[in-house]
Each structure stands twice: as structure tokens, then as C-alpha cells.
Amino acid sequence: MAKTSAVQRNLKRIKLSKKFAKKRMELKKIINNKKLPLAERFSAQLKLNKLPKNSSKIRIRNRCEITGRPHGVYRKLKISRIALRDMASSGKIPGMIKSSW
Image 1 (cartoon, rainbow, N blue to C red):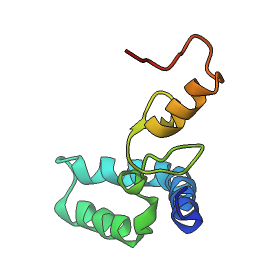
Image 2: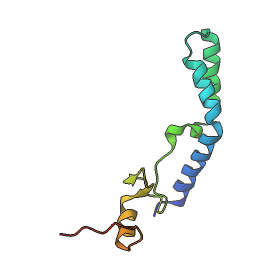
Image 3: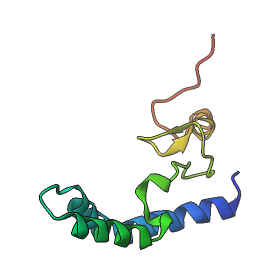
């Protein structure tokens, strides 16, 4: 089980990234537009830098929905390999059985 503080921090980052997503997209569009004057693009860059660091989507960590584990997480299922194996062994996932040979 992961530390609850790490899980809560990640949830805060997800919330912040959703809140500032539109504003970030607009500022990045201005920054990448080469037809605009340099001063306007620079001011947009300064505004982007003033936004919270945790509002960036790149800072979000993929974590297991069940345990909060940060490594070995399947993107499609949003659960870790260990949690998947436990659920498969206990018969909670239909059609999935533990392999043995």
C-alpha cells in the first residue's frame, strides 16, 4: 500500500491540471504562434510560468486505483500487476485464471 500522502498529492495534481488545462492550452497556442510579435509571446510565457507547477499534466503519476502503487500499472485497467494477480486468483475478474505449469 502506498503512502496516503503520495496518493493525495497525485489527486491534487489531477484536480489542478483539469482546472488549468484550458488556460495552459491557450497560452501555449500563443507561445507557439510564430506570427505574433516576440513581446506578446514572451508575456504569454511569463503568464504560463506563474501558473502552479502541479497544474502541468506531465507531473501526474500513473498509480494503481486499488493500492496506489506507482510502478507496474496497466494503463488500460488502471491497476497494478500485483493487484491484478490478486484479483485474478480470488476470481474477481471473469475469464482470467492464474497460470500454472
